[in-house]
Length: 373
Image 1: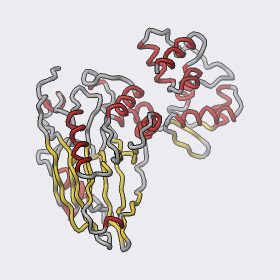
Image 2: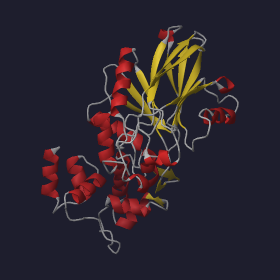
Image 3: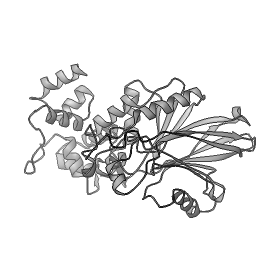
Image 4: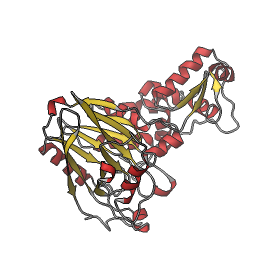
């Protein structure tokens, strides 16, 4: 990393953000923030500047297509380049997981992600064998209130119990917004993603499969038009980690299959506010599902609660959190249930979950007043 920083120093006077990004492998946005942090002169064109003809700068391209849909030819004409150059510039943005809407050859920045399609797991080797599945959510890594001690302890328990997969229910990082700027210790997409990859527990034989919520990490989706979950997985792979797998945005259905049928497990980041009764949100969620849409098991993130309910014959498990109660939660009189758990399941040859046991692993708010605001 120090070698790349030295290269940035060398290139700063003569190269654009995009050119330095190509040389170092960092994104242009990361380099811009790195320069600001180290007192480098700002390279962004000012509001009165015109784009350089014959050159497509990524920041100018994103501004151009932010609020209107343009064809490749229109983009090329704006920058006075060949259409192929416009295609290459758009492809380069896609490599950085920038989100686009593409309709009738027109392209525009997007701040939305489609929920992923379900996928299947062949579970026949575990027919009527009790199988452990780890779960955790709302870890908020990069918050001053994060509980890495709890998260590490959970993974020790997962390892001891033979867990192979841990489902994570969103809000793995704290994100960045106006109202949490005093609650976080690293700023910007690049630093928060790298911090997560560095800190997330790694145990041999355990993979973490995670969804991204529409808040916290989802703020980057809405504001920076970037697929933050896929960016996290990409960065993990660059760091040599193959145990972090992005499932999708907001929810994911996993079909556990046997020879004679299957059952569905859903992981969701629910959204919305908490209620007076801890189980109320889970109950209302199941009540609103259309016929044929119910999963057999639903792992719920977002509310920072540990809870089990069985409305409409759906096992609804709220996954807790690994973040102490924040000033926002105290203001709203919301309790944090710190911990996670293990789901023990049995499935018969027809694909029916014949046994579902929920093992909560609770911890406590030992840092309750460690941080002041």
